[in-house]
Amino acid sequence: MRIWSAPLYAQTTLGVRSLVNIGQDLNWPALEARVDWCEKNRVDETPMGLDLNQFANRYTAAWCSQHAASVASFFAVDGSLKINDGAPAIGREAITSSAQGFMTAFPNLVVKMDRLAVNGTRTEYHWTLTGTNTGPGGTGKFVRISGFEEWRFTPDGLIAESIGHFDAAEYQRQLYAEETRSIPEISSPMLDVHAPHETIHTWKSFFIHIATIVVGLFIAVSLEQTVEFFHHRHIRQQLEAQMLQVFAGDLQSDATSIEEFDGFRDYLFQLRAAIIARLDGKQEPAPPPSNDPRMATFAIFPSLAPYDAAKENGTVACLPTARIRIYNRVAFQRELAATAREHRFGGLAALAAFNERYTDSIGNLEMGAVSPAPDLTKLARPELTEYIGIVAALIKQTDLETARIRLFDKESRAILDGVQDEETLLKVIGLKKTRP
Image (cartoon, rainbow, N blue to C red; front, side, top):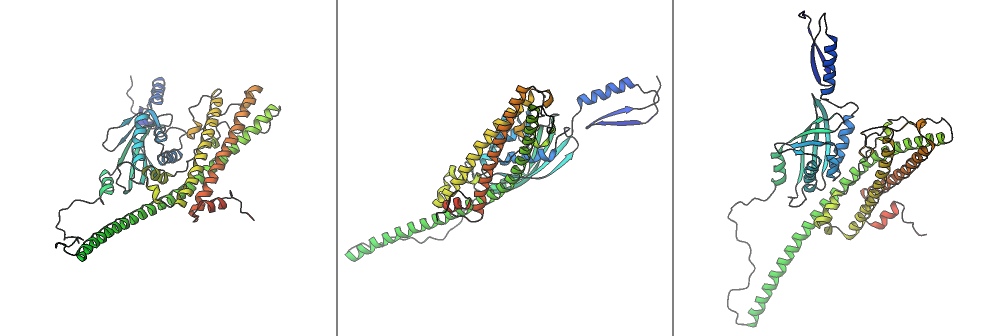
């Protein structure tokens, strides 16, 4: 056997490095077997076809949704999430529980993606978390903390392992730094309002005694009510500020969602036109591409987290009646949008199930992935008739959710513009006609 004197050649296949000697008498069958082994056992740095920015944006939106299961859906079935030195949460159920812990502690939780960085076989997702710890047993303190996760992906584009890092000491400091500490000190005697110590012998002394008690009680009650007034005003101002911040964020995310809905509707309209043409025996217009990216819609549902938390802990009572009514109006519109979203999800599931009959795919339309469409030329007339019914229904479901989101945005924008009562709100958004 000849000893090869040629240099080593580095063959890289998506992160798997295989060193192969190249010489004059190269054993090609052995080389091909080695490359095949690398293909089968490779560990992808980034799965082919995965848009990291889009994946990270949808992952960020899931953390802001107050729906912990949405976060877990980005992980493989046996995926894991480890935070600092804690025990890893393995499996979607455990990951859901871990994410729910943060969402419960911070009802107005907002996560912002700072940047992405690919480091070897891992992807670093850098984030900043903000929120007020008003959950059960919370300190009521505002927290702003940054950190990052190290992701390792499965071949089908889900997170196999996430290792999270953040400054736990700084997190604890922000939660408890302003807590009042018990420090022994010698305090000066407080002013004590009390009755005279001398023995009461006359009616004058008796009335002075009674008057002193009444004045003391009046002062005590007045001080208590004053403290309560300022405390409630602080809660009210804090809640109003949080709601304005959430409304502003909702308008930004809704603009992106509506843009995606418009693109998805254009795709469905083009597909419907092509199906009708096939039913009429025509070849034009052509259908959209089988893997049309306009199918991949992932809407960020609007949030009312501060108001929901205030209703749960009772602090909503600090708001004036007019403000409660106006926020209830917006919350009701959000519930209608949620119902429309559930109907659209049903339509997406029906479309994906129809597509799956003809093209095997792991894509999930509800999670913002692409579900390849079948070849219309291979469908029989009954199948085309069923297909157009599914597509037409989904067009109407998408239109309804879009209209609900637009109405929610109108109400949110009116509040940001200074509307103070429900009647004025209805006039501004055009739901109440002004009598001549």
